[in-house]
Length: 477
Image (cartoon, rainbow, N blue to C red; front, side):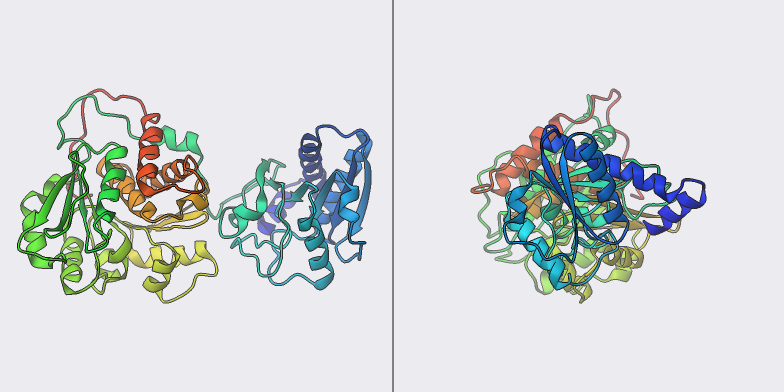
């Protein structure tokens, strides 16, 4: 952000002008939140940097529009009930470069603001929140509305960011960006790229997907993944699972059990069961409820050596056979969808900066790999020789933190891969639709089966019918 500021100023836009535009954007957002200015009481808490200057400019504008205003410094000591005197507080203490602990005086102010019922508008980013990682090390403002300038900062979309930022407003102020760390697609972007429904073809010709998984106690996981695939366009979904498992009563799901097998997927036998028809599948999901051991490990190795696009999820992410050089050597796309704990087990490190951590892993996994680190602000990264593609999806919320939610996501991603969508775009789109579906669930009592139902509702409204039937399967995907 600092580099973009400097480049814009060097190109001829004075810093005072950028601050004036930023102050106007904050003032407009404050006036809208207040419902008018005349007779309203507004306070701003201002730091010594640009955010503080932006807040002071906004305060001047609001005073000109009829509000009564007062400015405080971030280190002022104020009475306990001071926040109740105001209709709105503008937070201009710290900017996007803030990191570390908040000083005691500022921490006390933030605590007072957060305990009050007074609405808060934050300038660019809530004070105390890291603009790079979305991490709160000690305390941070819980904003009602955040007015961020020109582009969303990664920290607003990841980690603690969504819980602290409130309503996000992106205000253009004329800063020139040569490059951005990541993009954030909205539903319009997803709809524009969503594959159109096929008007012709048979069940095997439209995005056939194979789901490999299941073990005692986890037999429902591959079925949830299958629901995600069928909800997003796959007309043939086959589940490969141990023969001893009880299969949920879903006559629309095709299940191939590995014979003479009691509880676990044996590598050689399971692969031999499906190998004669493997080329018919446009993508394969490996891992949901799969369990661990020599049999699953051997099976994962077999699929890594296949030419099918893979989505690797759940138990497969921590398999001994999941060698990164084997993924890098594949001639087909590989999408990995770990949650935080799985990512830590994969890498041996706890990611402080989720975006940078994904970049490092994706760079090691090669041109055809995509890493999707699930969580508050799902991070999706692919690295090729030509470019690094990064996205942060903010559609989901805490309602996705339910058992089986990730299985549904892996099925969605596989279905889009099987429909010949670019792997990185497929993963971004899958995360977004998955998040939108999560927002349709109740906060209490929601489950992954309901989630898959909502995925189908959302996917049904995306894309337009396309004449001519499906495109042929590319053998090197």
